[in-house]
Amino acid sequence: STQSCVDLMEHMIKLIDPGITVVKVHSDTNIFRYDENLAFVQQELLPVINSYRDAHAHGIPYPDELPKAPLPISQVAKGRDTDFDVDWRSSLSVTLSFADGSPARTYAIQAGLRPYRPSFFHFWQLKTFWHESKIVDDDLEAY
Image 1 (tube, rainbow, N blue to C red):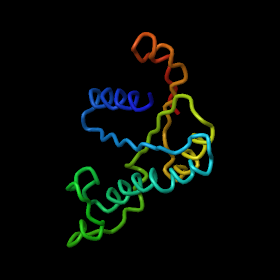
Image 2: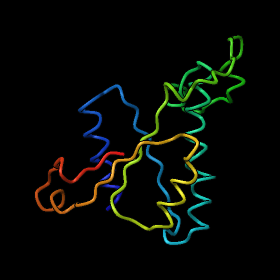
Image 3: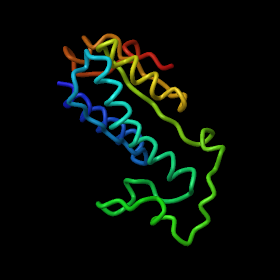
Image 4: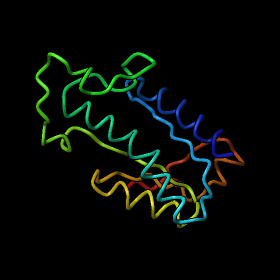
């Protein structure tokens, strides 16, 4: 399942670099419907990414560094210099990983994240992963 693959990827990433924050956003929408994918991107995915961008640009704690009930940025930044760093793109990156999937889902995510200029990892041959339980360089393309 996708959820199992995501959990495995998170484990692998944290082994490679424990300092990386992995944020998983799960969707229950119909991945074959373009309109549902746009709603997922706008209502679920972008708000999570935007909250990290805003915290980064304002120099305040990231959402995963806050108490379980996150406060609005205005409350977190109270009493701090909260000028927005317009150069946030130079020090914040978004990376997505895709295997195969619905063109409607892939296009909606790529279009929604265009302002972030994301990097992509494309796992195009999962046979090695599924049959031999390993990820090999030949199965991964980075863009």
